[in-house]
Image (tube, rainbow, N blue to C red; front, side, top):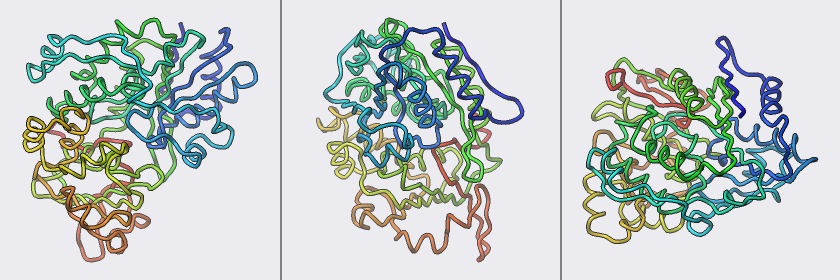
Amino acid sequence: MVSISMNPPNGCITDDALLDALKKSIEGRSLSKILLLPPDVTRLHSYAGRITAMYYRLLKDTCQVDIMPAVGTHEAMTREESLTFFGPDVPYESIIAHNWRKDVVKVGEVPADYVKEISEGLIDYSIDVEINKRLLDKSYDLVISIGQVVPHEVVGMANYTKNILVGCGGSRIINRSHFLGAVYGMERMMGRSDTPVRKVFDYAEERFLKDIPLMYVLTVTTVTGGQVNLNGLFIGRSRHLFEEAVALSQEKNLIFMDKPLKKVVVYLDEREFKTTWVGNKSVYRTRMAIADDGELIVLAPGVRKFGEDGAIDKLIRKYGYVGKLKILEYYKANDDLKENLSAAAHLIHGSSDGRFTVTYAVEKLTKEEIERAGFSYIPYKEAIAKYNPEKLKDGFNTLENGEEIFFISNPAIGLWARKDLF
């Protein structure tokens, strides 16, 4: 069984070294048909697009290569997004859309008593394990799951089995795992590998996924001056490789603050962030660093709606980001939230629970839409006249008027937190 671990102590992995590792991962295998499971463009800085293109070039002349982005609840990738993420060598016709509501089959169930135990009694439902039916297609000689290990609001640390069970999962496991994490509490999970949601995924991997010919390709990345650096590469099936990636990501992607931040400005690249469903990483990843009565300003030129899914978009517009207690109250009283637990979870995640203000600076949503959703609003042009992302550097900045702000150019690549919370 393949096991590759690359973590250069003094630098980054070059593309030549990366290509050699990918070649080694498929050496000696008899492959006629494979399935690649990368993330989508919302993981633009994961290095997964480049890795997918490399595998495609290595394999396209000798076997059939299908590519199914592990989009979870996100919209299917457009041709333009595919070009942005994978580059010109991956034909759009090779890309298969995953439909989390229709294209799945149940392969098992995580029992209610186990969920109750790992959630400390907070949740007592069972969780159906549903995955895309293509993963059970015996004609695939190899299924390669590609993605970035980074702090995450739902599971604690992203990727590994999450790419299968959420990225290629069905509505039941997505809804119930998201709600489990939201009720248990983001602050107790983000940046950590052993969480209730991860234990659900481990349970499913050990019992229901073992017959799938899976190989994980896990990356750890950072961004310096707009340049994406591949700091770690871990290829194989065993959980210890994921644990190695987690340890490296905790070193590279956790940014500790000595004191709470009063004002944080986050920029959302319009190629990557088109909804608050994804853009609220600006809230999730900074909430453990922002002071009570602090302020978060989100520069979001590409945000044009709230949910990636039409039904969820309607629910976000209906209920808004009004805080955990209010959403739990709405959940108990309304069937539409009970039937869409991932939406309920997201509404909990996206609120500051009144601790700090969240202001969205947009140009593709109206003031009324933003305020109805529970955020404050500022026109995008007005915001960038004061907080120009092209002039700000990551970290502390002092503006011309003497005001100090903390700037984050991409919230998807890290977790910012006070040291005393870990």
